[in-house]
Length: 547
Image (cartoon, rainbow, N blue to C red; front, side, top):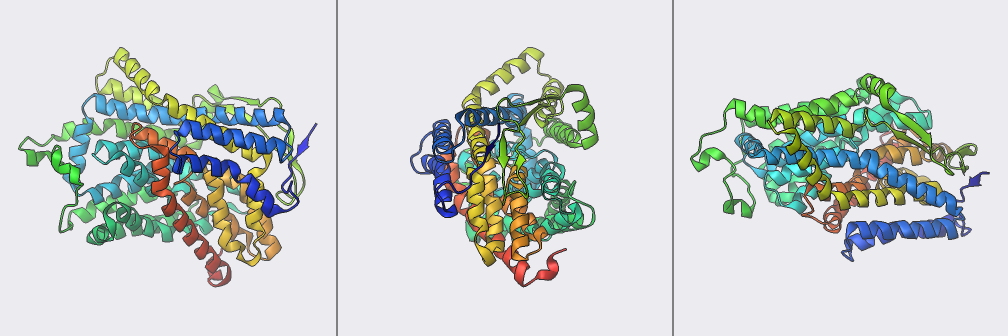
């Protein structure tokens, strides 16, 4: 027995899309304006999605319930598993006292907060995004910024803004590889097209990031650093994506941009050192200014060992050949009862009706979170924590993030309910019905997809084929709009509920999800619109940029 999705239950796509948007309005409205706690807002959004899916879109209740349970399970594993273990590594660094040395080593390189922000939120975050993705860079960057003395709301919001340019090539190119599988468009062309869109924003984002924290005047004082970091990352991003492929774009770009910033700081420093007002009340950023000995090279290496181990393990866990070996030892896959194959996606979203699969993969050994967990164990033992101390610390970390894990589960349950009921597709079709302006709205469709699903990969699965079909009907190269789905989606990463909750967790609860959403929403929307303008120009003016 199959149930076919209905995309215009009210008889018109735009009115149906308005109703389909209600769960998202409920969720974001409660978070941003009513100041409701994130887990309550997520549960309210989930409830409204279930009601609309069943009573407006005609989804059988058993399917709606199965979709929400599937989403909740996915929220806990692998997403929650990543968040838990990323925070565990940070807690180890703080518990052992070595994070103080990390702070001073960064201050020795750049005492200026603007330069620290570029190094951690943009470059180091891009490296973690390239290796792992799925919320890991926001958790790590946010926690590190907090440890360096950034206020919780600033740390969370800035980590989200910094984690934009690399998202489309995150997790060793998974979003682009998935887009290729969904659309059938050549992988090299998709990689090249995204590599001809995002580099413009890779140059812009460092300036934008610093301006969001220090204002435009503060940004102008460090424009050489912003330009160096942006140009080095963007150039590498373009070259690797166009002449190699999507796999190591972010990792290469991050390493080059970090090296470029370090080299620049050997020859240039800003005229003034920009610090927060509250810095004057605490310990000096540079330990040498406090009259105490600077940490030795051995101390610095020891302090950075958790983060070095994190980078090594995350990178190793992302290597396809290694993941394949681990999957062979551990992976368990099973069809979600009542849901797998029971729902049909129908034209115009797909050429012919096809069943929606619902397979839960419990790859407990090859999951990125497991790599983080192993890195945490090695870090703790290397820093001479006893096994019982590590166990107790892990328990405290788990207790600290318990409500956040509940929130992530509810957020993903909401996302999966909208996906399997067709609510998100209805909103996508409303974008696709914009005619000649579709190239402008095409990235906004990707932005919406990431805001709904929390993942550029999932957004490409959801809307990739719709982008292709709509472009072919309008006579636009489908590789342009398919790539725009990934490029526009990166700006939605700032406001997706999953990322916001992860950022809130990284601050230890010091910044609420609603405050973070208000902090980043306008940045996300304006940048998404700018991507739309670029794609519109590529469609009708700079057509030579399309491979």
